[in-house]
Image 1: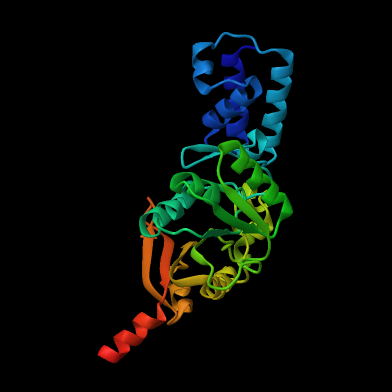
Image 2 (image 1 turned 120 degrees about the vertical axis):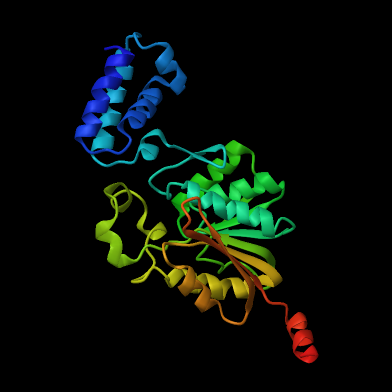
Length: 287
């Protein structure tokens, strides 16, 4: 079987199986089987696949047709221009989450003590460490996820430190300048309507957050108010139509609320600062 034939047959199988972007998926899986870049496929269409490569490719196609996400097959996902290891123990990093990093670099570049809550693969924490050139802390309740995040930090040379804890339970009060998080925000009521690749394969703890998808936002707002120094930033990725409810739950402890849309125009990131008591008192006296 040649490269060209393998791709043609794979595309047909994936299209019949209603797998999105069948051609790209076939190319990525074949590259994984051959351990080569995509350009190689176009430069060597008549090359014969070795028996191990053919068998591996067939196995990858079977897994993808069964619903296993491509990223869990290849164990790779690009985020902010870097390749991250991913496994079924962690949420697959999405391009939309890059807006969390961009927002942090815009509003809190001077932050020294930083925590990524629910770090998963470590995509946010590792990226911030590398972009800012300083240490970043990250927490998660999953030991398996923390192992993946630590491996990504090692591979990419990031100075990231990992904590096994629930939200900010292991963090001292008033010790941070920035808390960032891509929390679980899918309502339990929407589980049945999710794509099977998400519903059946990605970790539930990283997806669902109560009946309305807001439970973790409430925890984060309360916990961040405890661990941030006055003037410190809280930056959260938002789920679909959660900007209003999340903003409403912040209360008077928070100021300078900013909402950032993603490339599709959806409200994707919320950034807000913990109010400074002295500044508030001064404003009240002047009024």
